[in-house]
Image 1: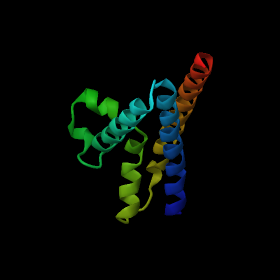
Image 2: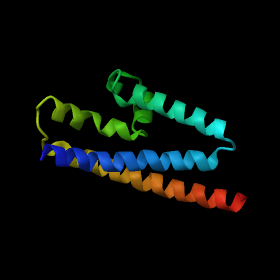
Image 3: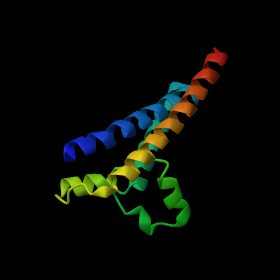
Length: 120
């Protein structure tokens, strides 16, 4: 069951990140802007997700910014799963948050695609 919960969390996180990438590529004016945006995104993803330091110890604006990135919702369940704590009843909140984030990313990506289509 732990792997199933992990996959339930991983699919919306990957989809949300992909949609953010589509949005950035639609809004960027050149390929170099896309590459720079992707590098900035991954740097912020690792700095604010909780991999390098706990974001709970950061200032309030940084904590709020950390919830923009999908990886933030995966850190707790991944740590529980990897270190044998099991998956408790706290799995519904990350799944709901990731689903909502994926929905918002889909709406934003759709708007960016429509906007890019009009420019062509």
